[in-house]
Amino acid sequence: MTDDSGAPRGLSRRLTQYGDAGFARFLREAFLKASGYTGEATDRPIVGIASTASDFNPCHASAPALIDAIGRGVTMAGGLPFTFPTISLHESFSFPSSMLLRNLMAMDTEEMLHALPVDAVVMIGGCDKTIPAQIMGAVSADVPALIAPVGPMLAGRDAGERLGACTDCRRLWAARRAGEIDDARLRRAHEHLMPTHGTCMVMGTASTMAALAETLGFVLPGGSSIPAVHSERLRFGEQTGRRAVEMAKSGGPPPRSLITRGALENAITILQALGGSANALIHLVAIAGRAGLTLDLEDVDRIGRHTPVLVDLKPVGRGYMEDFHAAGALPALMRQLRSRLDLSAASADGRTIGDVIDAWAPWIDETVIRPIDTPVAPGEALIVLRGSLAPGGAVLKRAAASGALLQHEGPAIVFNGVEDLAARIDAPDLPVTPDSVLILRGAGPIGGPGMPEAGSLPIPSVLARKGVKDVIRISDARMSGTAYGTVIVHVTPEAAVGGPLALVRDGDRIRLDVAARRLDLLVDDAELARRRSELQPAVLPPRGYARLFAEHVLQADRGCDFDFLTGDGAR
Ligand code: FES
Image 1 (cartoon, rainbow, N blue to C red):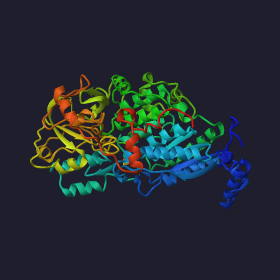
Image 2 (image 1 turned 30 degrees about the horizontal axis):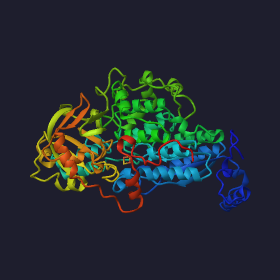
Image 3 (image 1 turned 90 degrees about the vertical axis):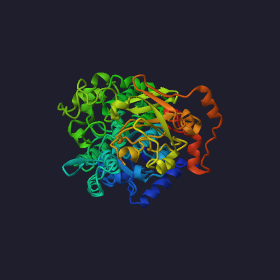
Image 4 (image 1 turned 135 degrees about the horizontal axis):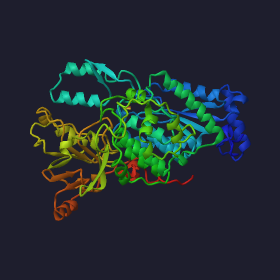
């Protein structure tokens, strides 16, 4: 059995190495006979379905139904669907941080695609780290791959207000901390923040990464935004299964061929126009690295300078993912950005992005997906800062920040890690004013470990109760794509490896100058040298995966991948 290129296909692929290929195939088939498969079934091309169903991943609750639909499509098209499990990551069920485990999931995905006899694979993705991990693994394994996102939740309603995860979770929690609402109101809203299963329904990391997966050619056109509970999601699953069989028969396209310079720049353009998650920058850099390409933060800033936010979704705007899908979905946004995209980039259905845009339904709801000359917010969504506090770069989601704080100088208040933050942020004697600059350090890739989403520090109670909604917050951590505020994250190098963040003391002056893209620590060099001489090296975890992570993780500007997993070397 061979594919169109003459390579072994189906059950004959990747035979266990006994030194006797015929026996290996004979034995493999015998085990399948034990499961009730006939020779006719096992002679078909095999489409693996990577299942991330898990009781610990409520965002993926619809995975079993989606797997059924994909399998039906595979069978209808003449393939054999085989489901297998991989690690599944959920943001609220990953201690200490899902980012610590993204690379483990990428390795799991890569190794299973390398070990199993799959001619093509459909991967069930969704919750934040899953789709990036799956693309990283698929690019490294280079097995033809599609992603079937589980889809976003529908928005909820309470007291005449539309609500959704997790922007409104954060807003209401902050309102309770500030004493603006009572426990009863918070409890009521709690019942309606997530009325269906699926991924967070704002333009957070999950929605952003699904859209970028579609942009890169891993999700069938328009498939990234279909709500999890719509029947269209299942029909999309069936179509995905059928397309996977075409790919299994032809042997392509290999995922590495999708990750071109043009496709990556398309992804950054879409990211900026979506007002998407800052986390996506880390993931895109890591994905590029798996294909042997370098994506610099300067590329993000350069593209951002002429790409405004066009999509009116929370946390930057007002709507939810169901609104984006009904407004025309990603191909409609691509049409608004047509002149700024590489139209020759591949779509997941085998056409080019240009062909997809041309054939897509002409109607666009331009209240949700704006034309380029009437954007949701002036200026770019994400900007890159450099300066004496962040020589390797830092990221600000400008579109979700307070305009009044974009040019600011103030005194630092420093927290050493998330435990210190939790212990002191609400202390009544915290010497904080609206001018203060809150610093969280020791929360980077190594220091966190795993760069937790702690970068959007809560507004200290003493300020919140006076009605202060935003202060500048700077960290080597990340922030949730659903969060908002003047939050500068991914400061590189992180404090744990001796970055300047480690040298800041309470009261030091910090200057943010967004116009000049600068973030500076206003302390003279001699004093900084003296402080540097007192630094102690970070203590690494003693064993296991955490030790491997600490020894090999790259900094945020290099995608937090492992140093031994980057590059396009064949195995
Ligand atoms: Fe899963 Fe938000 S927690 S997508």
